[in-house]
Figure 1: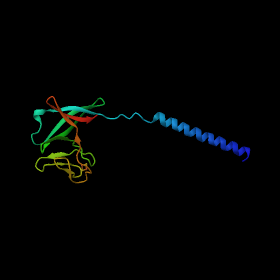
Figure 2 (figure 1 turned 90 degrees about the vertical axis):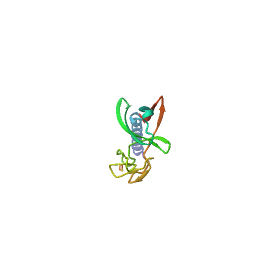
Figure 3 (figure 1 turned 30 degrees about the vertical axis):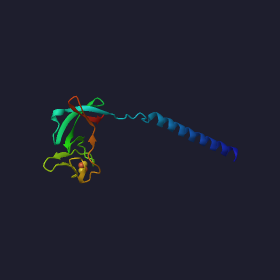
Figure 4 (figure 1 turned 180 degrees about the vertical axis):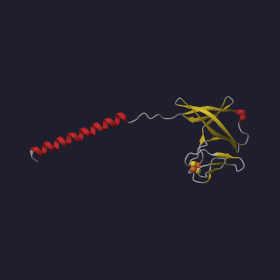
Length: 148
Ligand code: FES
């Protein structure tokens, strides 16, 4: 390799390395490494004596997420001696399901998804059962856990 070619390769190599280092520094300083992990926080939704003795009760409640007051609903279910809370969010594309008392099913208005009282998929495109939300009863109130 002659001297001119050697200098040319060395200069090109230097600028390639400089470009890689500059890009790495830019990526490291702008990438959001501190993505906030959401934690579950409990919000009161009803008095213990208002819990359904059997079947499904819809509750509407508000909770705070990052200084924003949000309102949502959930289904409090008492079935087969078990109390649990189901999310109304359809697992297909996120529409909100409704409880149909006569059919005893949760029905999704968007694409015909159907769930039984436990949240299990009966028909339609939903790929998974309705989500059970964390809950607890404390000091005479039902609390539902929401990720905030
Ligand atoms: S969003 Fe519920 S079935 Fe599609």
